Amino acid sequence: TIPPQYLSRGCYFSLRGKNPFSHLIYPLPNEEGLGVHLTLDLAGQARFGPDTEWIYQLDYRVDPKRVEQFYAAIKAYYPALEKDCLQPAYSGIRPKVVGPGDAAG
Image (tube, rainbow, N blue to C red):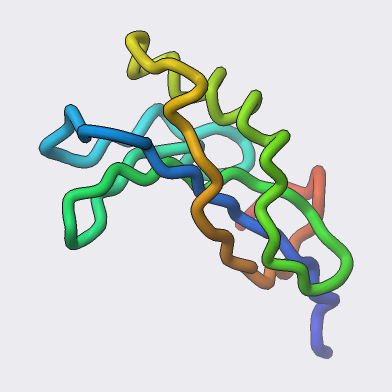
């Protein structure tokens, strides 16, 4: 039997200006996954994500209004962050076999 497929969009925001980090930062995981963590691209640019948003059709747009959620999550490990330093970057879609509210594994 083929299980149903659920779509989870993960958005990323990047940091405007100089990156103060030299390593990755992973907060404690939450019920949806690893949480909004910090990664560095090959150019050293800071990127925060992914979040988890359940969607019903393919749509790779990053809603700029999600900055509020990102700001709150990132402030836990980067208290000096200013909200206007975050800008939408990109998203990816992860197919899942468990949906919203279901336990993974």
